[in-house]
Image (tube, rainbow, N blue to C red; front, side, top):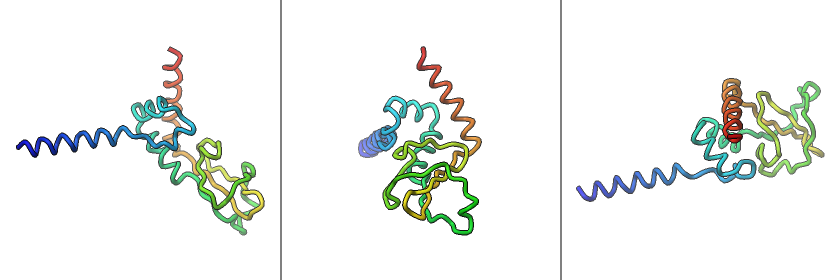
Length: 135
C-alpha cells in the first residue's frame, strides 16, 4: 500500500512539474509572465504558438508555373538552409499566408496563417490581457 501511495505521489509530482515547463523559444518574443498568462488563460493559443514554431514556416522552391501569380510580401536576406521561425524572422502570424522571396535564390519562405476562428479568439484574449495590464 505504501509503495502504491509513493508511486502515485511521484507520478503526480512529475506530471505537475512537466506541465509547468514552457517552450523557451517563445522567450525571444514573450516574457515568462506573458507565456504563463497565455498558458493559463488560453492554452489553445499556447499550443498554437509552439506548433507554429515547429511547422509555421516552410521554405520551398518557387513553383515555376505559379511564379508570376504569387504576390510576395517582401524579400528576406536569410540562409535558406537555416532554421527559421516566425519569431526569429520578426514576423507575426496573420489570418493569411505570407510569401517572401529569399534573396539570391529561387526559393521562397511561406508563413502559414492562423485558422480563422483562432484569429477571432486571440484578438479577444489580447484585448483582455491589455486591459488587465492597465489595472
